[in-house]
Image 1 (cartoon, rainbow, N blue to C red):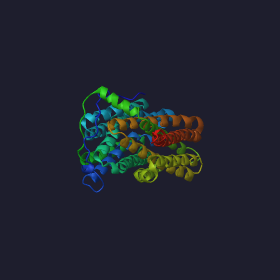
Image 2 (cartoon, rainbow, N blue to C red):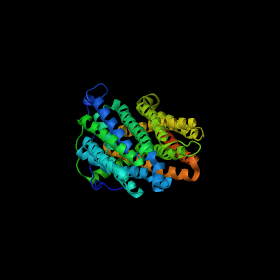
Image 3 (cartoon, rainbow, N blue to C red):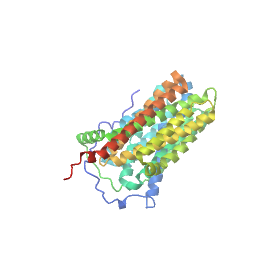
Image 4 (cartoon, rainbow, N blue to C red):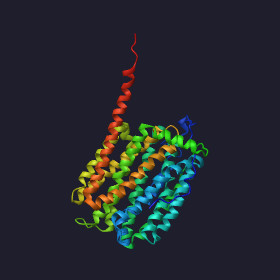
Length: 432
């Protein structure tokens, strides 16, 4: 089902073609400075709300399938419609943030998404549920890229990776808490009550965000200019490094979307036969993602960006292979490794986008988010189809194929960087 439009897709904003006017970064937020802790807590809460809402039906897919008599592939659209709508709307929404402000766009996105979330439990059919989830995903589109741009403008460059890591950590907590909450509530009162509980959790997070987020001090409003926006987007897509980062984000999320869309179906079936509440508790594994994403800055400092990506992708591949076992312990350890590798890789790639783009940061981040959530949408649907045709081994094969894509892109980037370093010496004129 196509994503619903928010009506914002016809509005675009010119990104600045000039460097940021703030050249003195001493007034920006940094650990230990006033406002940094408030900013971190506010964006952490926003990350919790975003992932709790965006993936609210993922742990409930077996119950949704049973309620509507739907296959795994059909039920997976309750997740894929939300992530797909977000992917399509994130660029125009982030463009609006260039005009109206990052803080205002994030607040509006949370309010609309929470409001829709309170109607989702009353969906009378699978079609209505998918449609409401698409609207919810479109509303959430204003938050991720705006948050990345807000951090790039308000946080000192040396603290940027760590700050984005905390925002991503909020995503992992939101994904975990939402799934655990829905699992146990669904076991006691059904999946509709579970979705209502997630809506209330997100509402509380939205209130925290509104009162805690510091006002933007380094934001300069843009003007409505579609041609300038197209030029900015074109310049980002013409940047080879940004293209590679976008592809890496999409492929990492393909793995993650496939695994966590299907894992509930696997665990409620033989040989595990776990109840819904226990299946929801499996998402405690997300705590590993909280740690690995927050540690991304240290990984980059020690190994470099590409070294950190190699470590993340190797960890993800090892987890996929380990999860093939029929012992619950092996599956859980596999999920731990997949989650750790994914969140570390996502934090490294997304922060690299923010640092690479010197102008039009909102658009650069929006393009990354579009690729990222398209990967989630594709992974969820393709993972369900692969599970239907080849069981868990089919889902793992899809994940390994995406992992191979990340390795290939990173290797290409490594060779391109090496060639770039050697080129000046190769073409240097002979000194007489």
